[in-house]
Length: 89
Image 1 (tube, rainbow, N blue to C red):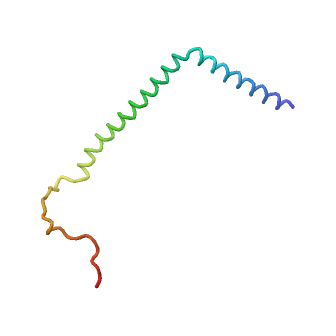
Image 2 (image 1 turned 90 degrees about the horizontal axis):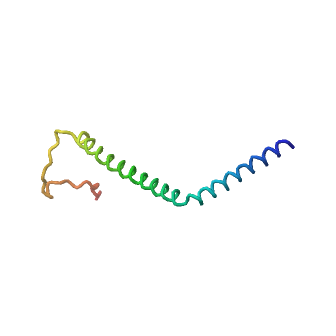
Image 3 (image 1 turned 90 degrees about the vertical axis):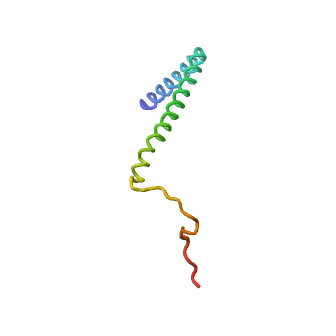
C-alpha cells in the first residue's frame, strides 16, 4: 500500500511541475518565443557551417586520392572501347 502512495505523490508532483512550467511559459511567452527562434537560428547556422567545412575538407581528399601522376587527356570517340559485354553470336 505504501508503494501506491509514493507513486501517487510522484505523479502529483510531476503534474504540478508541468502546470508550473506551462504557467511560467505563458507568463514569459515573448522571451520563450525569442529563445526558440534564436535556438533554431543557431542550429541552422551550425548545420550550414558543418556542410561548408565538410565540402571544403573533401577537396584535398579528392586530390590525394586521384594521384599526382594522372594527367587529363582528350580522346576521340573512336579511341574509346565499348565497356558493355560483347554479344555472343
